[in-house]
Structures are given as structure tokens and as C-alpha cells.
Image (cartoon, rainbow, N blue to C red):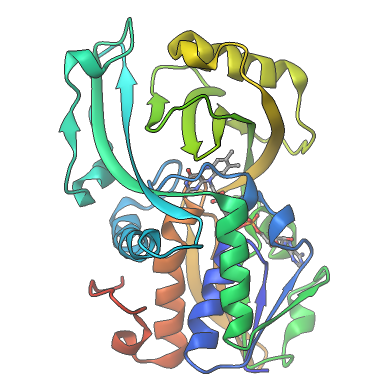
Amino acid sequence: MDVLVIGAGVCGLTTGIYLAEAGLSVTIRAAAPPERTTSVAAGALWGAVRVGPPERVLGWGRTGLEVLSKLAAEPGTGVRMASGREVSRTPLEPYYWTQLLSDLRSCEPSELPAGFTHGWHYSVPLATMPVYLEYLRARFERAGGTIEVATIPSLARLAGVAPVVVNCTGTGARDLVPDPTVVPVRGQVVIAANPGIEEFFVNRDEEPPWITYMFPHGDTILLGGTNEEGAWDLDPKPFIAERIVAQAAAIDPRLRGVTILGHRVGLRPSRPEVRLESEPLGDSVLWHNYGHGGAGISLSWGCAAVIAAGILGTPGSTQPPGVTSPVS
Ligand SMILES: Cc1cc2nc3c(=O)[nH]c(=O)nc-3n(C[C@H](O)[C@H](O)[C@H](O)COP(=O)(O)OP(=O)(O)OC[C@H]3O[C@@H](n4cnc5c(N)ncnc54)[C@H](O)[C@@H]3O)c2cc1C
């Protein structure tokens, strides 16, 4: 084994794919398989909320935007390009990372729901996470990678197990590293039958821990949600689900009486900054790749590219096909 990746969420899988497709022998070891990670609960729209630092996020996000846009053109990946709006009842600055988008524009008054006065319209990749994670898992295994389900109790014990170890443990890094700056930000969402909504929608006005958003995924629609700092509880709470649906239906009447199909809860791995750096681990090298907050789907390819460049020493050759921007 050349590389041991810890974690089978979106960060572990994309890192594993980069390295396995470059010809390395890669094993992913994870306490939970992809379908039981935080990653499967995500919306998952390209963007960079609750993550830093901004200058590095722009570089990772640019790579993510390019790779995900390319995947959106391929059948079976679970990714598509989606248009939609972020709206407010007060003047609204676009997020800094929307500078990477080519079609960002102000909403026309006719595009705003009743009561809203400002908004931005744009198009970005949107991933249906259960499908996207399955695509990533299959692609990793096709490249020769293997996935083992096992908990790693200590990083120190991994010295010498493989020349390179990559730590993609999300909130698990809090205990494993240990890193007390990693804090869970609990997100609960509702999956409902889609009554015909095609565009995504985000209301930027709500007070934490609430945020109202709607991400359509074909026959289903994902309704959010919450940002609960420091909460570890993975059980969906009925009163939260009821409020999510009520808030969404108040904005879009097509959601009144909607059929509920399921609930998902994930713990965003929040940290003041993403930790993407290497350090010695005995005779091995340990790369850290965690702390992606509310943006792990969007930044995972960019962060994986940095690690691949660090391990292989050839940044140009580590770009996935069709990606031309530099990594940072
Ligand atoms: C409701 C919600 C909505 C979101 N929406 C978006 C969005 O629209 N766009 C976006 O980009 N991001 C979004 N996010 C954020 C995104 O989901 C996360 O940033 C991302 O999933 C983090 O991925 P990860 O691979 O680092 O961690 P995880 O998916 O949590 O995976 C961690 C892996 O590490 C393993 N692990 C942990 N500790 C150990 C250990 N000791 N030993 C072995 N294995 C271990 C786990 O079992 C798991 O396999 C959202 C998150 C939530 C909850």
C-alpha cells in the first residue's frame, strides 16, 4: 500500500481517486462507509459557506467548480448544473466567491417571492449526494482502490503502515488528531416529493440556527435546514422538520401538504480554517485534509489536487482531465 486515506466522505473519496488514478496503491479506511457520512446529508450546491481562509478557498473552489461542472455533463454522476436565487428582505451583497461565476446577476423584481426585495440569480453545480457518493466510490474502486470499514483509534499507531497517510476524518478529527478547534455544526434537512420546482432557492434572512433553502433533485426536493453549532445529535427532530417544511411552504405554496420521504442529519466539520498541510508521522508523511465546514463538496477536488501535487511532486499532471486552473 502506497497511501492510507482515513475517511470515506467526499474528501476521502476524492483524495483517494486522485491518487489511485495517478497509479498509486490506495486504501481508504473509515469508521462509516460513504452512505453513513456527513457528506450524504449535504444539499449539495457548489459554494463556500462557513469555511476559510478566503484566499485559499477561492483556489480550491475554482478547481471544484471546474471539475463538478465537467461531471454535470456526464450521465450517472449525480451532478447537474442548476440555476436559482439567493434572496433577502434587505440589501444583499453577493458572497465573495460568486466572483468565480460567469452568470451572476441581480434578480428582477418579478423573480422575488412576495415580501423579498433583493436577490441574486446564478448557476452552479448541484450534487444529489447518495448518487454522487456512489459514483465516487465506484470510480475509486475502478482505479484499483479498496475501502475497509474500521475505526482508527490513534494516528501514532499508523506510523509505518504506509509511506503516506491522509487524514480526511471531518468532525472525527476533533478526537483523532486531537484538534479542539473542530466543532460540529449540525444540519437537519427534509427530503420531499418534488411538486415541480426546478430552481434552487436560499433565503439569507433567517436568524441562526435556521436557514431556509430548497434544492431540487429531479423527483425529490431537499428542504433545509439548520446550522446548530456544537450539537452532535444525529437523530432527526420532528419539530425541526415541521418548521423546515412550514417555512418552505410559506415561500413557495407548491410545497403546502408536500409528501415527506425522509430526513437527513449531518455534522458540518467547522474549523476557523480548513487544515490542509503535511507533517512527519514516524518515517511516514501525514497529510491533514479536514475542517471544510459547509463547503466540503465544493472544495474537495481542489484540496485533493493540492495533496496529489504534494505527494507526486508534479502539479501539472495531477489535474483531472479538462481542468486548467492552477491549484493553490
Ligand atoms: C445539511 C448539510 C448541508 C450541506 N450542504 C452543503 C452544500 O450545499 N455544499 C457543500 O459544498 N457542502 C455542504 N455541506 C458540507 C459538507 O457536507 C461537508 O463539508 C463535507 O461532507 C465534509 O466531508 P468530509 O469527507 O470531510 O467528512 P465526512 O463526510 O464527515 O466523512 C468523514 C469520514 O471520516 C470517518 N472517520 C472519522 N473519524 C474516524 C476514525 N477515528 N477512524 C476511521 N474513520 C473515521 C467517518 O466515518 C467518515 O467516513 C453540507 C453539510 C450538511 C450537514
